[in-house]
Image (cartoon, rainbow, N blue to C red; front, side, top):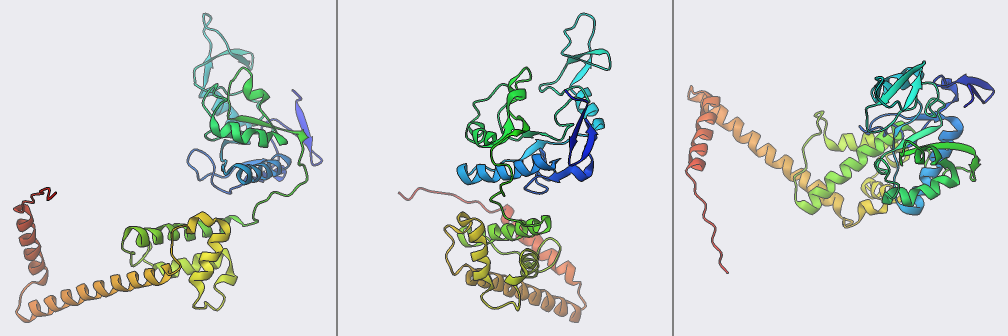
Length: 332
């Protein structure tokens, strides 16, 4: 393997791909086993991967994420030593690094630092693409032929390491080079805003389909309506420009354009139902607050401790529940 590679007029060594030659993989910030990491490859490989995964999703419905991408030299060292140790004289060595024989101790190999295709920023490890030697993984069997059209090869993965998830980009085999991916051009900030909206959408569906109550506020104490409108504004300011009364319909239309399955089973009057549920929740809360205030005022007028009264009432309720027995019979 060559000691250096040249791309974009710049020559680099393994594990030292210049930041200016790297580009981010879509979906932004959703990679790694944790699902919240950013992933980068050399620009031509990143362009191919983003185009390829859009093609895979369009043709199969499969969404691909990765858990391995560009690795610096130091990252390669860490990765390698986590899976190998210096071999004893009696042990079989799987590779040699810096003149020393190494014995494999892990479940998945890592190339000796300085020669990995991850170090050239040209390789990915795909999530849920089969375990060691499992090249018949259903997702892989559907997706790989499409990825191959875009220049992604399995030769290295099918070799001695037997890693179905390990793919390497070969520009000479890319049949779609220069084509634009069939993907939206949302920024990472817009992606995050969309996630907020879809999270709200799922919460709304629970209200409508499961009868759950709408929380009065979000985790940050801000009313959910304010959070929702702010998220929509970050996604597409035209949706809330002037904030017309038909914003729920516009929101549903926007979500439907992104993924029609998200609105399946939800009737058109969901905004009204949601607002009514929210209003009822707020009315009930107001009644409770009013009763608490009345009890506190009465207690104060009588020189009593309002908190002590509340505690005494709750204690009596607990006592009643402790002694409660429920018997179920089959009326049929």
